[in-house]
Image 1 (cartoon, rainbow, N blue to C red):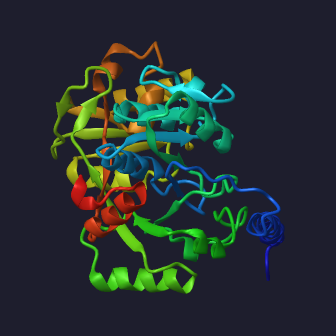
Image 2 (cartoon, one colour; image 1 turned 90 degrees about the vertical axis):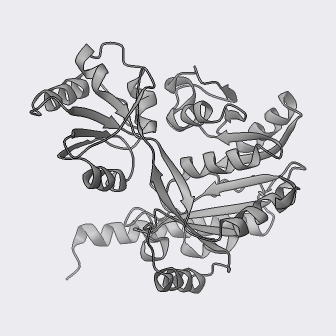
Amino acid sequence: MIRPSKLILWSASQLYGLAVAVRNLLYDLGIFRSHSFTVPVICVGNVTAGGTGKTPHVIYLAEKLSSLAHVAVLSRGYLRKSRGFRQVNPDSTVAAVGDEPLLMSQYLPEAGVYVDRNRVNGIKEILGINPRAGVVILDDGFQHRAVNAGMNILLTDWNRLMTRDTLLPLGRLREPLRAVKRADIIIVTKAPRKISRPGMDQVRKELTAAGAGEQVFFTTLVYGRLRHLFSNSVREITRGTSILLVTGIANPAPIAEYLGSVAGKVSHIPFPDHHAFTEANLARITGAFDSIEGNDKLIVTTSKDAVRLKEIANIAVHVREALYLLPVSVQFVDNENDFLNKLYSYAGKDHQDR
């Protein structure tokens, strides 16, 4: 017997899917206008709500393309308290620009990072103030069809493939799975580092059956050395290190798993994605840290959480001294050169001309 609560969610997901399908049809028919630009526009997005690793992939793309042209990254600035178009600087605040754009600005000194909920207006503003912009990367813009991106890169989490999900609010799909046909490239993110060839082939087959093309790539997460939030000093993790992991991201499982494989004891305080840390949260973190026995103990957080934690003024001295972030980047499992050739070709340069 189907539970009433699940039946309600299923009904809501059907209505949601119908509304999204009608909207997409109106764009497909040209009734809703999609704007094209002379500058190359690369969209990085997903059809699943949160947790696919868009930010490190945007950073990867911007770093690779910066050798060819001046890169502009445009994000909506999720949960920021400001409105309209804004340029993001490394010393901007989370309230003004959002946590992910601020993080990207700090990691991408050679690129321009901007926020605007209206992506069409945002690109126009970028080209107005920065005529040198040679390529625009849209962060989380796959559903923003008012912009006709020349290259759509769609991400899906290896541990939660979009083909195995259902529509919101029953599942996490933002739109029906047939939207995969709009993607030029699909990247399966957070894949195991020692993924087998048959495993990749099976996932490719599953995505192809859903309507994806042949351009399917796989990336894995690579963690760097711990970096202190305030001094930028680095240190190693040993088996004697006890760690309190503090996260406010959609899917903290990979970082928790990694730390569990390299550290001694790991405890975890998870908060919701994009969480704004409060005094009560800080007291909870401090209490949990103080309860850990031994001297070799640290508080570890993500780069995205770090930009929010750094803005808290009244962190106890011993907690400040123990706060480290764990940098993460993406690495292609294979065929990176094939991916880069497609990327550079679209951006107007051949791979060999780097």
